[in-house]
Image (cartoon, rainbow over all chains, first blue to last red; front, side, top):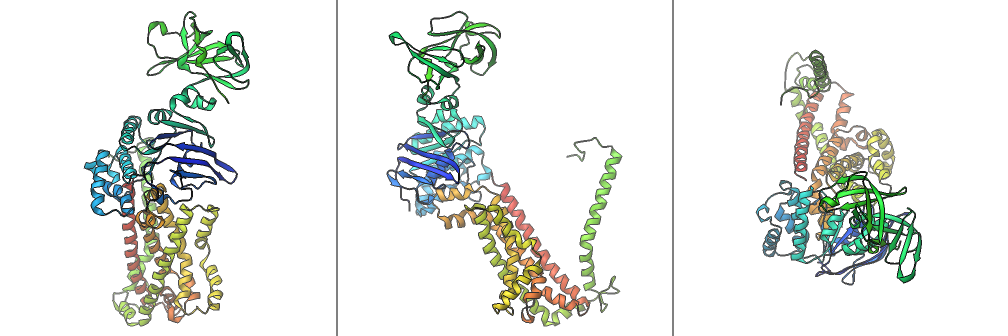
Length: 360
Length: 279
């Protein structure tokens, strides 16, 4: 029945989707390694669901190919791809019991009944729902329903497991619990996973690698730390974490390897690499140090606190550096000498390495 | 729960007056709707030779007359012979159209939707005038097929509407889920879509049957003496004499409709129970 077996490498080879004049996805290349947990992250309409739909076989690309372990599945119908999919709304069959829902894909594959029953029990044990096997989905909580959906999508050892915002409908506490559950499941099960989400914390917590999509294009793909520390562009810098973005108007390399840029906002920054005029630089609010007197940082600016907001684990300051430039600073320290008041004169400072240089 | 309204801004007296006006209106509306039915039932037991109200006395004679007159039985059988195939054809075409338009990758969806509904907006006499010469050309005017075709035309939109409503009552991802889990198109339909929409299919089929059973205009054009339906025979008899036999026939049809209605309501209740059971 199934034409694709084993944990698989999934390769998008120049796939694109157009609806008439509208481009849902520009030509995209992406390789997902066997056993990798890969997140597609982006705002709605960014193309992440289109990409997932192509892997599932719901959306046929207008160009390009999709390969699983080198085998072309571009034109293969969904039922022959041996993929598992978990939907945001669970999509359990309401007229079947939990056990019958999990047995469904095995019945479709014509497994003998003697094989199905123990396999379903084993799978339900894995998501800790054996005791609810005979209930109908409507009698379960949202988190339990999603665990059934997970068991149903994985019971037949699919080569790739697709998850379309599986935790989007759950409240915050349950969502964090389910994140652990899914990670544990992945560690135990080892499948190749593509996980669609618009929640950057979820993506950062769960995925080995993340692709950030915007306007039907992958802006950047890589491990979370790489995207955070070396964003390619302003969108990535702003989407993953917080960012103070400054526009470069001039770049100068001086003697002894010193490099600096002038920004449209009227700052002159010492930087650690090269950047072209017209591009942007980013300074993370968490990488800026505030102090009442200047310390020995390469970049030190006098400013004034204009606003502050208390968050659960930090204080966020707005610091006015000059007429055109306000920056955000996040201070996690609770020490008294790291506390500032509104209107107080402070020094904002950071090292050249903290200025992230972006290529476009 | 106490009967107190949440917004207590209106004065007690004013509220009482509003309530009584509403009650009176409701009683009037129901009387207007149900009185003719009550009168026809009473007249079917009248011992007068013509339909008059109130009846001076009571008899079961007219039911006897219906039984003795074989034309009534033949017409009833004809109505079933036309109504049942009509319902089945309407189910096939209406369900396929609903699936195609609701789930398929079709262009001009809105336009197609309108086109499917068109036979409902069109006066039956227009449909009849359109069909009559075509079916005569095909030499079908004396067969059941002619009127079955005509009634299917008006039955398809009814099934289309009820099945479309069923399809909209649950997310399309349920059908897609079945596909990813290994079900082919036919298996996904049989194992998932059908259990979700069968109530819509059956209630649409019942509606199509009831409409066919009830329909006069197309039957006038498209049936012959050999295939005449109950409404057509009633019509013929009406122009002949206002005998209480007609009231007896009407009462028998009423009983059948009430049974059908009751079944449809029962199915509807089951459907909403199922809907409540969904996340």
